[in-house]
Length: 362
Ligand code: EPS
Image (cartoon, rainbow, N blue to C red; front, side, top):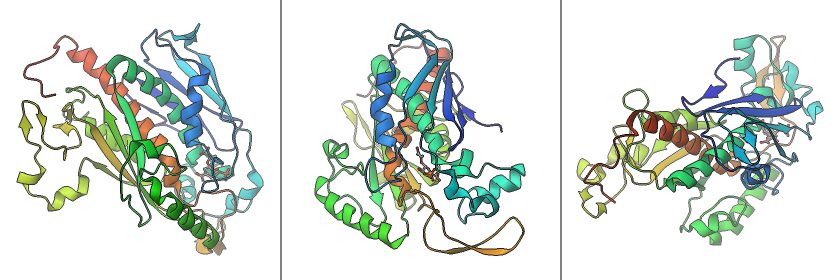
């Protein structure tokens, strides 16, 4: 299967299936000398993992990273970094019926049509399990971006179904299982999710990611625009159906006088553009949002067809997330970090000698 790699100078290839023995990735192009240890993967992998609250899939994976290559005495060597995580909690019998049935809203039908063969266990390669390795690879990217450029990539859940945050506080985001920026609303969300889970249905979500500290100049017009690459990377996350950069679709009803971010010597007066103009970073925060569809694996019976070409009724068994968006914040951060890392190296390769150009708007 092709297209399991992305990036130009900082490339990431992931491999593995949800119920196979292991998942993994190979990162190529990482600059040498970056200190990195297995323990540094723990935090972000735990933030993304299943089974951490009653509001997500109850599959319990240890998600222990093994660094197989590319790191010597705790520092990257510039050679390919191979990371491996063994799968430990597969329950493939839940997928017995799925082997001969296409779950509505899933990749079952399209994988079958494309390849004529598929691994149905846990969704195989199409499972969100694969996103573990994106988050793992991004631990390396986040660390380099922070150390080399002071870039910080953070995300939050910006909408859950029809509930939107009524206040915003970055401090609150890491203190609840939803990555929700308003602590006061968390009990309301818990109640809504408990009711949803009982009903057997699912709901969509919106996740926003913000990268602070990105210097001006990253991104390559015309076909390697920073926003173009971000959109592609974010859209590659399971269940994502929409991507916005900055104000995104809200720009449709705005006037130019409102949308353009006026410039003063002491800073831009707004950031409707999401920190990118002409495909190149402005030096403001880079801001992107994604829309995640409601999980297709639900307990409510639905119509489908089976391999024999007969109409069937499907009820999805297994340990599924009633809202995949709840675990998507670290994944969206990861894709933003991987794209920024790639573009940092690409900018350095072509324009590293240009240096700081005056005037620079802070
Ligand atoms: C997933 C279905 C569930 C989730 C899985 C993603 O798998 P299973 O049915 O095998 O329990 O648990 O997520 C993960 C294992 C993970 O690490 O994210 C799906 O259909 O995408």
